[in-house]
Length: 358
Image (cartoon, rainbow, N blue to C red):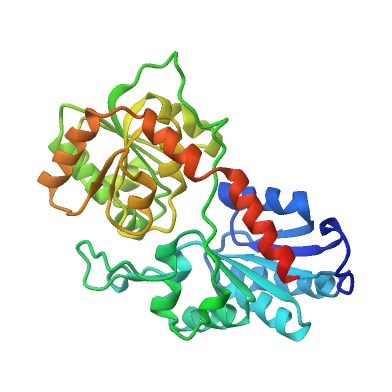
């Protein structure tokens, strides 16, 4: 396969590695499977050193079996496990493509957030970036820090900010794309004066990074509206904050089932301290939620003029933004995502970049 430059794309084999079966990861897998002979491997989440070592051993064994028969390697996120992809890519002279998502190029030292915070992970990430033939971040802010800081002493983000030695020529921004046929409004459901936030809250770190604490404070300061936080354990959150009566917390919801929450909410808030390209924001906008988000990362680019972009963490400012959002119509929000971020555009650019590099 490796010496078949004139062959069809289906004759080109890619090894695909990611640490989680997140929806947007599965979406990339589906895209690549359409165009290449794809062989995926998903690592399970691990919490202990023995579990981590077992996972890494499985990756090395899998690579040893498949590396000679592949034409390239596709890695979702650059971290410790990506180091093994990099080593094998160098040893066997294979092309390595790395999709950069956010955590791998973000550093918030106060919250110990990002691979850059740990010196070992920083080394592995740098090595992976240096090895890759193409780095594929989902937005421009993951290339260069926009300089926005909200309540943080240091918030550095971007490949060129954290790893300035990386060759800019290998960086290609490919935004996420979305299925507007699934995430759409339901004419039978009337939008309520409800504010929603969706985030995977696993621990206190993600509670702070995703802005769940700010969302809860906003709910307490806005008793006239109902608030729903999706993706958190209510009992766990109670340990970190006092919950107002107008707030409902819903634990994990399967990705495709989120649409029912978006369809009934008037406003969607994205109050994260850092982001790559938040998929939940775009999916909510497709369901005609009016977006409210901080002026960080790609959030203002996604929202455009269809919602409210906040330039301060002051609660009065956020409340004013929420009040404005309640007066807007979410139809333009959907139209923006449909026109700016179609799934077909990501598929086309992603496959063209890989094809031209192999």
